[in-house]
Image (cartoon, rainbow, N blue to C red; front, top):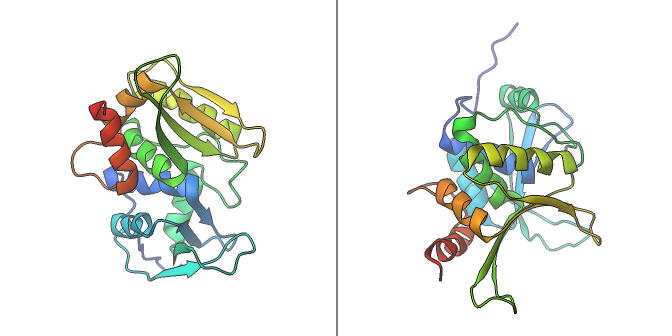
Length: 213
């Protein structure tokens, strides 16, 4: 049997865990059992993933949803060993509605969480008529209820929080993992240590939430 050379080094570290989070929420595994694809409107995030994986594949452009405008950036590469690794930890082709518990080392869960936030999450600052203080929410979206429930359970283990909730939207039927102000701040403190790979536009909002401004 021929030896298969890895493109991606299969060793857990902060950057590796971050990319796994991005793939779990915003990536795609091909049915050919070899190719992995990361697609985003944010060029920065695709570049960050390429850097974390230490690969040199070109970044392309593509359209989605019947549009002819190529608004999305795409990083696609073939790596049979990495593909099989993703299968072993619970990420599969056509995973959107089926993804559930993943095998993520506890030590690296905060970095995985940051990847999920950059992949398909949001940070929001808003005002509420019944409070003079700014309100914050942290959300991660998924078509899979089981995945958001698992994320909530693991978040309560990895972060000093007790809250959080999962609900389904009426219009899109997406499942949302949501954290309120106090828990959001506690989570952000741990997922954004100094000099980490992240999507800068979300880091700017996170910094505002952490500073209370």
